[in-house]
Image (cartoon, rainbow, N blue to C red; front, side, top):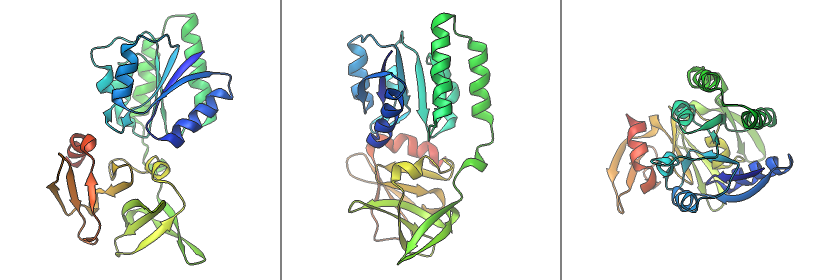
Length: 251
């Protein structure tokens, strides 16, 4: 079986590739952007299955799929369940929420293999996706996070966090009290565990809470700058590729 992974986070891509190769599946390519995917699809590749993340560094993967009919089916992998119905319309076999676990991956692969022997049961797939889309995920989102204070470790309520950010190859949180604490989780890892209604990843190195936003102003190169009242010294910029989606997220 030949598969292609479309994922802009290298750590997540390597993890998925490792999981697939452990199952004897040949990962023939890894693409990290809408542009790369579009060029790849133009080459009319002979692929059995795609694994698509939805949020890429230059946009949403659906942008590359518009106007195209893929012969190979897709398993979507993402941290956001609000795209389930749209994913279903794109020749999707399954829709896996990050972090992906072994059992769900095995089930998705088994479902793909089954479709190769018989016609795809669209009604069943629609039912599965609707259940995922309408299910209550609130209890699954991270509610607390461990922080380091000297040689001590304490637990902090996620509701106290205004934003997460990376700096000098380390990761931190900034709290409502105006304090900064280092954390052991990567920005990618934590972004997969937060409620997307309350937190948004504005760029590769920063996730901001909706409660933290004091002001949003136009910035250079078609980007936006977010002002946080408690942290005037921090420059939080929404990357150009995320501006449209960020505005939608703000409501």
